[in-house]
Length: 180
Image 1 (spheres, rainbow, N blue to C red):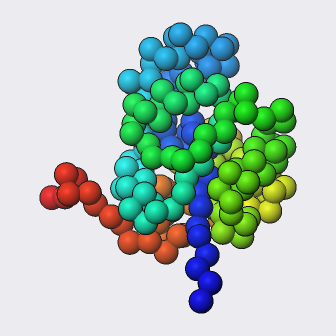
Image 2 (image 1 turned 90 degrees about the vertical axis):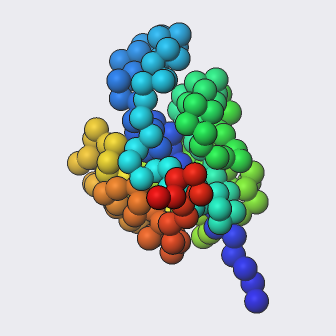
Image 3 (image 1 turned 180 degrees about the vertical axis):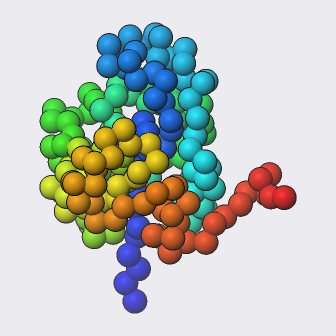
């Protein structure tokens, strides 16, 4: 029997973490101001259980972001987000919506596109997923361009993070320290 390894690609900002309060500073590339705002960011409701469940089930995570690696690593570390690979702004020549970062993720994860789900809040996430043959999931909870996201026709469209587990066929895993 062939066991197919599932893998996940997550966009960072507005998909895993609500970093919207730093959006102006990010656009202006005022990274020192952005770094100081990281403690004020929020992990989306339900995302901790999603990440713990994915990690508990040994599903590989690659984070793809159009932000610099230093920023991404600081956010991932601050929220203790498990990941195996990070593809940042400087890791590829062509950024989303070009599929280069997603093709690189497939190579790093040594995984066929049929076994990967990609989650993002923007049309460029969906376009890059589709161009690389990866199943795309539009995440409505953080999107500030909802109509563009919907019109990009993701393979799946979800309203809240916990739906990720349903899509992957996983039961929520609650770490003992989170149990009631």
